[in-house]
Amino acid sequence: MKKFIWTKILFFSSTLVPLNIYALNNSHDLNLPKQQSSVKNQSTEMLKGVVSMPFELPPLPYAMNALEPHVSQKTLEFHYGKHHQTYVTNLNNLTKDTPLAQKKLEEIILESAKDPAKAGLFNNAAQVWNHTFFWHCMKPQGGGLPTDKLADKINQAFGSVDVFKQKFKEAALAQFGSGWAWLVQENGELKITKTANADLPMAHGQKAILTCDVWEHAYYLDYQNRRADFVQVFLDNLVNWEFAASNLD
Ligand code: ZN
Image (cartoon, rainbow, N blue to C red; front, side, top):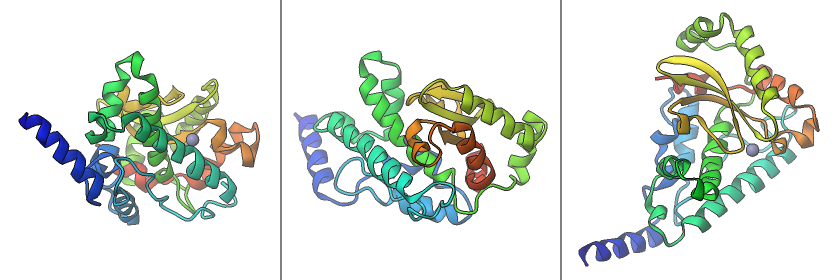
């Protein structure tokens, strides 16, 4: 009985009070808010977006047209405004009036990843996380070279930044169908991986450092079927090395 009362109180308060602790608000689980640069403020700001619903679409860390000419406003209007929003809406529908609505996004991902019967829940929760992470992996006037610790670790793992970019691109192109290319950290070492559909590093005991969305919805309006061109532009003109560096252990 006591538990029931608490459940009701929690549910009620989460419905009415615009200050809750759920989901995307659990910023540290998203690897998002600890960087030192202005990205920190952007991330922190993003994480304040959680209000009356358990899961909300966090604000983009830049304007819809800020990545032009490399990624058009139209692409972001669809990719962020429609696709990302749909994953958030689906996740809310799947968790509504269940104990899951009280859980952190990362908890839902890790629990559902182990259960094939919860594939729909996993796919939507992971895609919410993936996209939120991906927006921060890009910035206006991005690209250039990593510095300091990240540069050292990339050189150590791959030999040079150029080799890293080549291997990352190969992984992105080798992903058959929809998915993601990743730079991850596992047991302290950097690795390049790729995942299909909504799958993501945390489900494999790895920490995400950087990602590029290679679902067609990420690039088709701007690059049609030329995924290689999109990934090259991502690496040369968009990548946010400061954000990637902030994700290192
Ligand atoms: Zn996407």
